[in-house]
Image 1 (cartoon, rainbow, N blue to C red):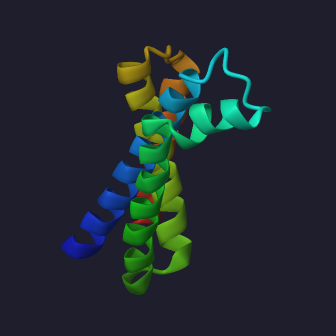
Image 2: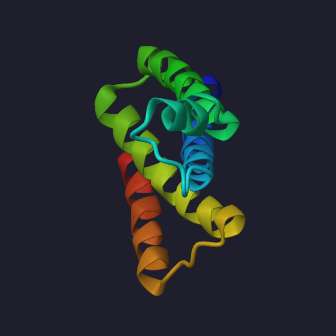
Length: 120
């Protein structure tokens, strides 16, 4: 069971990192004309944060695929997605300075409670 938990933690962690990195990468494209070939290359293809985010998604997928060997999809998917939502909310507040409203907090608590119930 510990191995499955570690696989899901890896999946959720890399998923959250991917989302943060892609947001950072896209912030760096402000003012860049992504419709032009040159702008797209410099804004997207040569964007280290964006590229790292895409690779983080691939690593996240790897963890998830191995977790699916051990867990039912009806457990793995909701746990993975909902835990990622909570982690991204917290991380975006810390590293991106995004504000968290009372609704975010209440929603995150409800999601965590749902994960708890689902895994029992």
